[in-house]
Image (tube, rainbow, N blue to C red; front, side, top):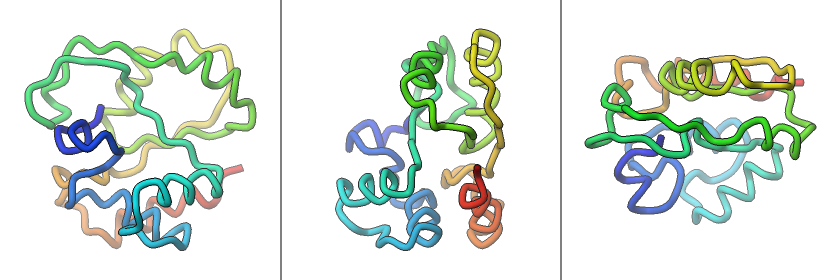
Length: 142
């Protein structure tokens, strides 16, 4: 679920210290400080979709540990509509756990799943270079 900064901006990964856009910019060769619509376009051109596991939840602040009352997005319909998707990468442990609990039991399509280290500033214990190395997996997807 997006944090407070992202919800206010109505943009994925809007917190200035989130590493998502710098990592994606480096991996996909675009300027991570470009206007948001250009960054979205760069993801589309690279065949990368970004979607929250949760459609809604209750949470005070931005910490994933405070998420309650989860309602998942309709991934079954999403995957039926986007049949070219073969692999789902989770941005951190909470996204993976929420997906496995709320989505996976009802899924009717077979995909590969991988958890990547969170790009959140709350996961600052892992240096940027190690996050970047792990996120290179998105370039090796089938």
